Image (cartoon, rainbow, N blue to C red; front, side, top):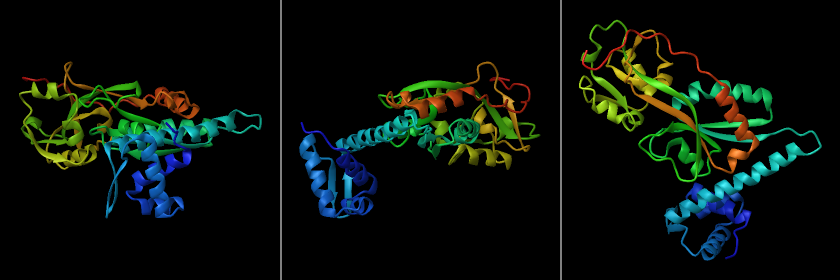
Length: 305
């Protein structure tokens, strides 16, 4: 089977990202017919249809989605190869270039900033680019699997399996706590506020065993919105520690006791990128950081009290 060239891989990725041959041609400086001809050539080489053609554009088939993901990862390794070879040569060049990171909201807010600041001091030539991705479905790890990120910060061990072919490592384990409006004398009487990422978490078994927790009355877009609703007195919420670091004085947190649920947070990357200098450097900085303790909680609230 004939191999795909880097130029063909770039065309494949561009058509997938732009949603059509004409748009991809504009991005790449090619004619629509040249892009279409290149895609047909790739389909012949691979023995499968990569895109479903329509008047409105081109949609990747399942095979096309997999091919585009592989193509992004291969092209990224080309970029990393050039950057690392230049950094290793005798001219005194330093490690440089982009470093693509995907993370869910609270991790991007509370784990990445200090790590990226330390990384910048040690490797000023690196340019971290962070995408905030909802931790639903493939989540941030899916960005790595699709070749859109070099490293993801994601929850580990959840109900959604990690995309195949990635390697992971733990960064921290955080406990959940009950959040409610400060000074409220009966927080368990309040409506429960939740968000989709939390609804799909691996704490589901714990939730089902809590007879004092009602079904969620309000489902918000993200944990930041949940916290704002609690601060306004709209309800209570069970939230992980990173989410509660944004808590204003109008929100009080209550320890859920020794059987409280916890959440594992870690990184995910590909085996190839795990050996690259930029990814290794960021993992070191993430592991070196120790998030400050969550502000003091009130005495524990246990099931059945």
